[in-house]
Image (cartoon, rainbow, N blue to C red; front, side, top):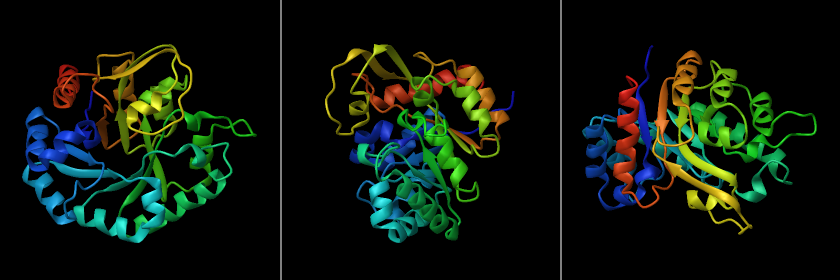
Length: 273
């Protein structure tokens, strides 16, 4: 089977990157990763980030940029990441008040389109990275995530399907990637283990959320070490025309984060990736 280049979301190793960005990039390359997806600039100028990534032999593929930052500093942020040389800017997460079902959601969809248009002017494609809350049903029965993609043209907004959160939502990840054939340039590979009906899952991605009583257990795991069935997801990514897959592990649960992403890369190598 055809394979795709593999990147890692730097948020997975954020503390290491904060301490020694250049050294962390070199170690990521030594593990066999081809590129990185940034989550901030780590106090460095765009030029220095670009130089460190490229010196390590990696591609600065994409950047997750908080929605609030994109709306407040849209042009400046896009220019900064254009300097880094990213191909994609990703809307990574919506705070509770911005999500489907909230009063702001409809206007946020218009903002997604505006971000996409501005990025396009700089030769950057905007992607939307889902969680499970976008699988809330709209009044017409569509998932909110589908509503976003139905509303905004594909030349303005494409998908970065997070396969972990698709499965958490009760939807088949491989099927959902295939649904967006031709619109899925980057697919997120993320593994987890879930029991029962856990709450507070978003705390594990470093987001402040209100505490809820939990009736289960949830943790992120290295790719290939949890509940996901990755061979069909990888096959679907190729079939859908993806250009890259990206490993992400928000929390490493006591294991050193660099070890966790190495385990993910080794698993993918065991599949011929």
